[in-house]
Amino acid sequence: MKRSLALLISILLGAVFLVSTGPAATAAPYCGITWGSLADTQRIGSVNATLTGVRAGQHPCFDRLVLDVRGDIRGFDVRYVSVVRQDGSGTPVPLRGAADLQVVALVPNYNSAGQVYTPANPRELVGLSGFSTFRQVAYAGSFEGQTTLGLGVRARLPFRTFILDGPGTGSRLVIDVAHRW
Image 1 (cartoon, one colour):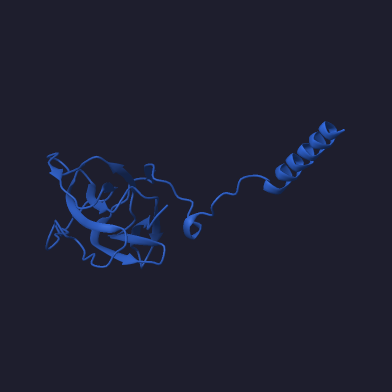
Image 2 (cartoon, one colour):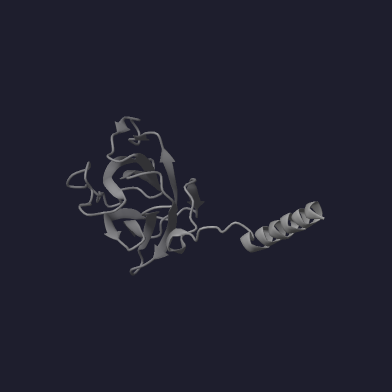
């Protein structure tokens, strides 16, 4: 009788434990971000466009890099790489941070009138003091209709890339990098 009672209590306690624990809880994504860290590429077609500027901004959940373009950008290839290299020469572009994000915009830095986007300091395109994720934005050149930038980030973090129309007849390539996973 004592064995039967002990067995019954064990079974009941086990059943209570199984019912009360339920499935394992999963953490909600940081700020609702569901991006990843794999390469992001888009090719749109052939349009006459020119890089006109680069700027950065801070948001509560991510840092943002924006490439301003006169005309419609033809596409992009953004990916984490072990080393960002200059267009044409292949020379390494050293970047601060634990991870290097290579940003290739399918747009040249010049137009048919000979106007060229020439940054004042190619090693520091924008000031990043106080940014959570970005450490450095460097110009890696423009060659055969594409322009490359190196974005040094704190760590390999999720990012997203997209193109916005405007203002006017221009467009913008936007790269957002999350502050954390």
